[in-house]
Every structure is written in C-alpha cells, then in structure tokens.
Amino acid sequence: MSVLRRLATRFWRDERANPTIEFVIMFPVMVFFLLSAVELGFMTMRNTMLERAVDMTVRDIRLSTGMNLQHSDIKNTICDRAGMLPDCRDNLRLEMVQIDPRNWSTPDSTADCTDQSQEARPVRNFENGQENQMMLIRACLKFRPVFPLTGLGKSLTTDAAGHAAMVASSAFVQEPL
Image (tube, rainbow, N blue to C red; front, side, top):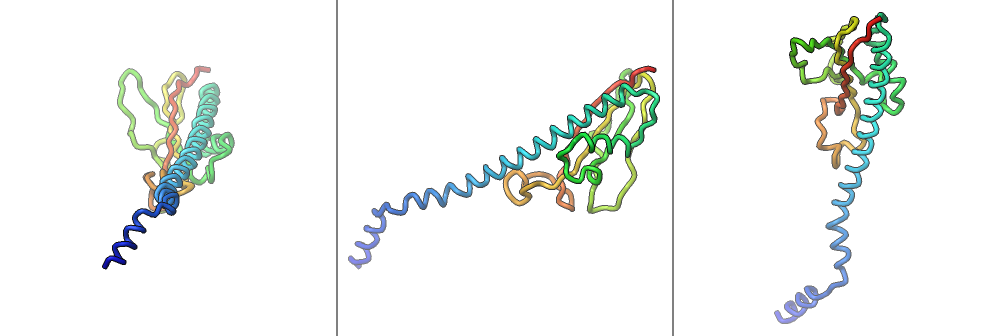
C-alpha cells in the first residue's frame, strides 16, 4: 500500500505535462473562435456586397422612371454588381412593394426567400412603381455557411437544404419624368 501511495504522490507532484494539459483545454476554444471569426468575415463580406449592389440598383431604378423592369432584370443587375455572392442567380429573391407614407401599414416582416429543399414558387409580391410613389425593395440571399458544423455557422438558422438567409432592403421614391 505504501508503494501505491508513493507512486500517487510522485504522480501528483510531477509538473512535466502541465503545458500539454493547458493546450488540450485551450485548443478547442481557440479553434472555435478562429472558425467563428472566419465565418463572420465571410458573412460581413457577403452582406456588404449585397447591400452595395442593392443600393446601386435602386439608384438606377429610381432615376429611370418609365422603364418597366421585371424581377429577373433587377435580379441579374444585382448579381452582376455583387461579385462575391455564390450562386447569386439561383439563391437571390426580390420583393418590391409600394408603401403609402400617408396611410402607413407595416410591410410583412419576413422576407421572401428561396428554399432549395422545396418546389419553386412564384415571387410573392413585385410591382413597379409609378412617379412619386414610395417603394420598398427587399433582397433575400440564401447562402451556405463556410463552417456549418462549428462556431457561428452552427448557430445560424438554416432551411432544410442547409442554407442561411441574408436580407438587404432599401426604400426609395420613384422620380418623376
């Protein structure tokens, strides 16, 4: 019994493996933060590109009164201007509605997004504005997280196909002729 006690005491006082234990404890935490930072960086880059493309396209729409732009025209313009959005034409969905500032009613808070796991469905609401009408355009982009099983990618709300949603919106008044 004394031999066992002596071995346990020597094992307890031995400090040669302390750095290994610290590494084993801290390494998963550091990897978690690293992967979350990379995911956040990609999300910020995508969101910035989407917002910029929507703003540039809205400026063109606002200044080109009388043109009857369709959903596909605006969607292609946004995708052409937002260079870093993967599968933009397949995963972007637009919604444009008229808003009456004198008789305010809040538009639907949920954006109309694509879902690759379901059948294709028509655009929920898309109407071209006339002169001096206030319009709201919302662009919903579905994207696949870079690291879907760890860090920030795991905490994102995804659909059945594993895509998360990113929404950019802009309001504008159609300029008169």
